[in-house]
Each structure stands twice: as C-alpha cells, then as structure tokens.
Length: 353
Image 1 (tube, helix red, strand yellow):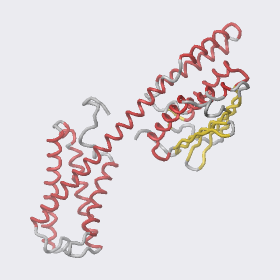
Image 2 (cartoon, helix red, strand yellow):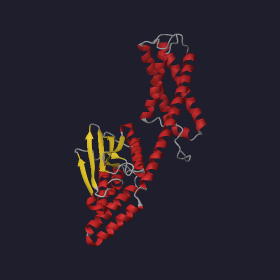
Image 3 (cartoon, rainbow, N blue to C red):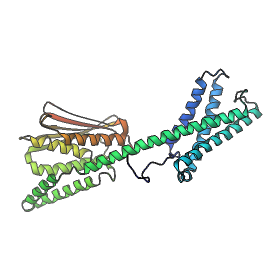
Image 4 (cartoon, rainbow, N blue to C red):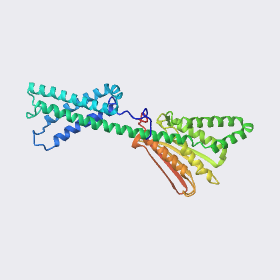
C-alpha cells in the first residue's frame, strides 16, 4: 500500500486498547506453558509452580504494557529504530527489576516459588532476555497486523470510491427525461421522483463518509425502484417480503442493498421483453440477518456481466471488513432466475473495528 508518512501505521501499537493487552498477556501465558512443558531436567512443574509462574508472567506483561502505553507518545517522536530499541530495552530493564524483587522476596519469606538452584543474577537476566524477546515479537506482530488492517481499510475505501461512480450518466439522463415528461402531466409524481433521485445521489456521494442502517438501505432501494418503475412501467413489478421483527437500526456499510437491486433491474428484468417481478426478502434467523434479492434473468452468457460481478465483489469485501468472517454473500443463476443472498450478524455494535 502506498501511503505518505503521515498515513502509515505508527510503529508502536497502542497497548492501551484491550485487544492489544490481551495479546500481550496471552504471549506471557504461552511462555509459561512452553517452559512448563519443556524437558529441561530441572525442578518439576507442579500446579503451585505453574500458578506462581503464571502470576509472575502476567503481572510482568501487564506492567510492561502499562509502561509502553503511557510512554507511547514520547516514543513515537523518535525514529522507529531508536524507539524500538528503547522500548525493548525498557521492557528488559523492567523485567530484570521485577525478577530481582520477586527473587528477593521469595528468598526472604522462604516460599520456594523460585527453584533453589536459580540464582538472583540468572533469574533476573533470564527474565530480562525473555521479556525483551516477547515484547519484540508482540510489537512486530501487532505492527504487521495493523498494516494489514490498513491495507484492507484502503481497499475497502477504494471499492467505495468505485461504487460511487456506479450511478451511471445514462441512468441520470433517462431519469431526468422521465421526470421532464411528468412535469406537465403529473407534477406531484415528478416532484417525488426528483427527491428520490436527489437522495440516491446523496447516498452515493457520501458512501464512504458514514455508516448506514438496515432501514436506510431499504429506503434507498425503494427510492431507486420508484425511479425505475417510472421508466419501465408495468414491466417492473416489486414484491417486498419483510418478516418482522427486523433489526432496522442494525449498522451497515452504505450502498449494500441498492447496487444488488440495480443489478437485478439492469441485468435481469430490463433485458426481458415482458419484464418480471423483483423479489426482495428480509428475515432474521437466529443471530443472522438474511437479505435475498431474486429476479428473472437471461442465462449467464447473456445476463449478469462484469458490472454485476464487480458490485458483488465490492459488497462482499466491505461486508467482510465490517463484520468479519461471520458475514457472507452468495449469488447464482438457476432455472431462469438470479438469486443473491447476504448474511450478516445482528449482534454487531460497531463497524470497522
């Protein structure tokens, strides 16, 4: 991904965020498990040693995370190489100090949580080295992961930009000609068509600026269909199947349903001399919302082309980015009908996390 320096992901991830802290704590616990399973021939690991080792590792990981969290702004002012060295060195120093204090307390109270053969220097230096390696691995992993997410975010934005251009000029010209023909004969319908067209273009131009909702997506599709029905007349019949209750406030990426409806009209019904019925179904099954768009269409060799596939790829990618792997999209032609289905989780509270 090409980006300017100000757009690149910071080299030091934000460990103040809970998911990042979980990664750090998980790495600490993983090290304890590896040490417990390693056949080193030393003192055996019983449940007491495992619990004390886990407690030590988790407290150390939490302390290092807090240190890197509060010093993040200062470290980010430094070059990445120098800042990285300072961050890992500070973590190693903290690990050595933490280990020295723990060793001294354990020796003073006689708890024998640290194996008797492990000296203060060995325990401190070993802990410092392991801490430095673990912090380096975690920071690198989070940096690479953030870079990947930034690429996905940029790709999703590019797809939205491409989608904004899908309101084709000929659709605008046809709509304006239809409206012009209605101005004298039916000014009320003409005014409503102008408002529908205005809302449609406003949504297209603002597709990447804010999220939408299920209610807004359905309303936008209805406005688009109202315009197309003025042009196609009785050739376009629309059948909505809304199985209540529906999560009308569910956040969704903008321009998800309308492009599928547009494809159904342009590449399906409008190409049939007798037109057809466009079926749009919304239903909730368990934790999933299903949106189905079904329409009569010519065979694939004559019907849905690159424009359809591009729109579907764009919508599928944006849904996966918004909801993760729980979202899926399927489409296919069979027995003179084209069916496209979207499945998204209903328990999502925020998009693009």
